[in-house]
Amino acid sequence: MRIRDACWLWGHEPGSHNAGWGLPAPSRISPVEAAWYLNIPNLIMVRYGTAPLPPDAQYLVPFRTMRRVVWSVVGAGGSHQQGELDRVLAVCRQLPNTVGVIMDDFFRQGAAEHAVFSRSDLLGLRQQLARAERPLELWVVLYGYQLDWPVAQHLALCDKVTFWTWEARDLDQLEANFGRFERLVPEGKRRVLGCYLWDYGQKRPMPLERMQRQCELGRRWLTEGRIAGLIFLASCICDLDLETVEWTRRWLGEVGDQAIAPAADI
Image (cartoon, rainbow, N blue to C red):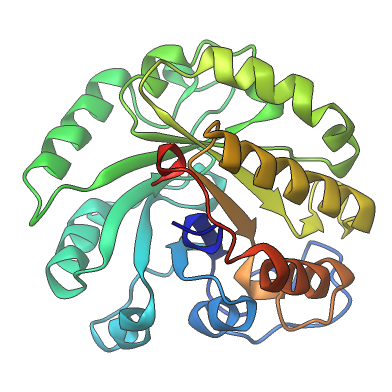
């Protein structure tokens, strides 16, 4: 298995981040185009806004070129729509490379049990996944600032937990925070490192040295078997000639074919 095989691109509809994030120009690249541009074989598709995802069967055609695809059942901002899981289960029947579902922005202060779904509802979701066309994994997003929240019981019901550092300045503490993350995630669950290509927390460019730091730590943790994958966010900024995007593209070209241990297999 190669490093590239464990890499994922976080996908949104074209232009999803054009407003509100301080980007230098509008983007129009599609998720599949962005994945091919970076030479990343796996794609995580997350609903951004109110439009259903996927909107129809024709939309799925380009996704046949991906090795693996994961679809959101909780979209950006922790939003959930009636029938969202049913749409994903229908996609699973049409798109054989669908391997899982993800809950974005799932944990939130002020919500019951600090989560979009109660633990009971999450158990019900798992039961529905078990009845799918084929087994689907349950992924969830966890941020560094949530490490002290009472989330362990929910994490125990997930298959993969993705770890994100919301503000670029906190990447200086990535190793320490990741150690806390490892201790929080229940044994037997796979950990995935999320890497932002833009400093969304401060709505400004990601400093290149911090991009390089998270990628090199991710490579090391992949080879050590401490993580099962790397996610790069997001597809909808990959055509803006950003320094971090172009560096990441070159970096993947240099290290993507390096072998990693089976322990890191996803």
